[in-house]
Length: 280
Ligand SMILES: [Zn+2]
Ligand SMILES: [Zn+2]
Image (cartoon, rainbow, N blue to C red; front, side, top):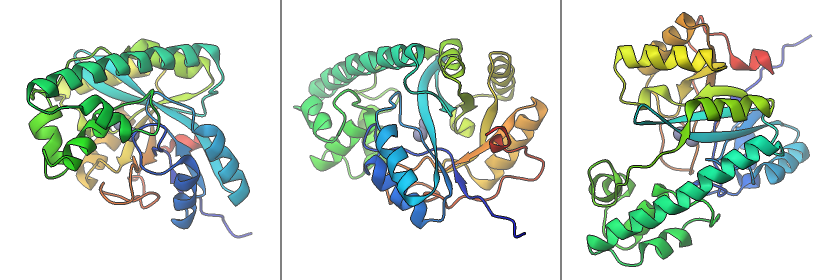
């Protein structure tokens, strides 16, 4: 019997957070790229999973119900993905609702900062770029800033207005790592540390994070990511192996252009990795 090659992409975003395609559009694009097992993992929001599940069912691929939770750990903002979560679980729902309320408050403070820098109407403007009014992110502010001619592109908008030290930068307390892992695991999900190479952590901090993450029930590290170079993937494959964590792969797809890898166009996991999908 021929072996069926499975093509995984376990990290994607729709208009329910800061992606530009609706959930069905994300599934369509994944199918076109040959993905057979897709996770939709919107930021702090599971509202797109219903539509994505239907579309995946129609097209005959597997849709993993996911979410990407924002966490503050030792003053660093981290993202933890839950794969195979139950979006109807009361504990998870309450936790995500709390983070979204915090996001709203943060958006108001960002808008105040931008106002002081002479950028008017940014809260409304960012909202106009957000399909989900409960989820206004910095990316939506960046799109508004570009549209209004305050910045050349999204990267420039982050550098000048939204990144650390800029006028629109506000510190924000997201969920505790322990809470996020708890919400994921009580709802039946597998916690995955997203795009670890993006965090500005030294070796000792990485080790502290991974051992805490594992001890709190963390299962996998996103080794292959649209945010990672091949060298970074190799480094994080070694960290995962050392801490007995499985390896995940996801494009972190937000929009058809931009990002290192398109949806589904991911390199293989480095050799020696145990894929997180062995747990599916
Ligand atoms: Zn992320
Ligand atoms: Zn993401």
